[in-house]
Image (tube, rainbow, N blue to C red; front, side, top):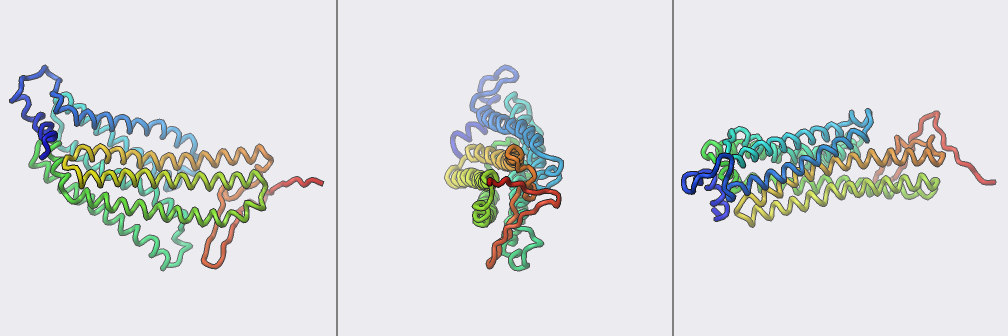
Amino acid sequence: MPESFATSASALSAAPHVLSPLPSGLSYPAAIYPSMNLLIIGTVWSSFLVPITVALFFFSTPATRRQPAFIMNVFAILFGLVEGAINMYNQTRALLGIPVHPNFDTVFASMTILVPNFAELVLLFRVVAVYPIRSLSWRRCIMIYAPVAIFKVARFTNVALFIAKWVQLKKNTVNPLETGQEAWSLPNAKIEWFVQLFDTMYISSLFLARLQQRNEAIEPLSLLSPPTLRQSISSRLRTLFWIAVSNFVIPVLLNLAQLIFIFRDVEFLHGTYIFIVNNYVQIIGVLLATIWSTGTQRYRRSELDDDGLGHLTIRQASVLTSVTPSTTNVQLSMRSEERLHVAKEV
């Protein structure tokens, strides 16, 4: 066991018997550093969820609030807030030297490993939206969704095993730092982060590939469309592309950092800090993606109205593309009463 961790872990239980007692409510620095760091990280990142949640509901519409992706966003927010609240409760009591019930440590450990799984379900719903199961052949459906199902089943099974092992470790140790250090040596965290890395890369690659196909299908249309419509289509594609990239690059980099720490650092605290940050980055990433997509739709709709193209509706500001190996069809869905009025110069 590393010297720094041994000092921190033993200070909580042994300090009152070895060192001079401190006034009530005070702890030794070696004992409070882990709790202070966890408290700061959890409080700062969970506080980011409040204004982003307000923006999410502000830019959404009653129709979008009924979509599965929006509902999963709300659940991800709730999980993140619950994780932050439990973390603040546990670490505040630890700083004050007040014992924490073992069940709260178990709930917090379970939340930290469950939160990224639920946040990433939003990405899965996006893939289902661009690869509708009903429009795919059974062979292509298996090729696309079989790896996703394997990843998800493996991750949730591994999470269940980890929680069961954590409960067993908690029965043998009183100090949560000692429990965390014992759990750090288990293979479950390595398995989870490896599978999470490939799961995120695979789902994001599917989404990016579909965006690229739609971009290629849109280019001929943009050459024949009015300037404002061309700008709207181009802006939408750029927005969706950067949303996908931001939801893919940052979580993957943090995931790689977690793997480096778990293999190179025998002390669990440093990797735990990165792990908690990555949890909130994933939640915030999917929330911002939803806000940007709904916000840009409102902006494009008002822009079209200002330019006299307000009667144009492309499936509610969306371009539907159907890409097959032999043909590429760009379908513009317009309501029967809507028309595109183009003034021609004589």
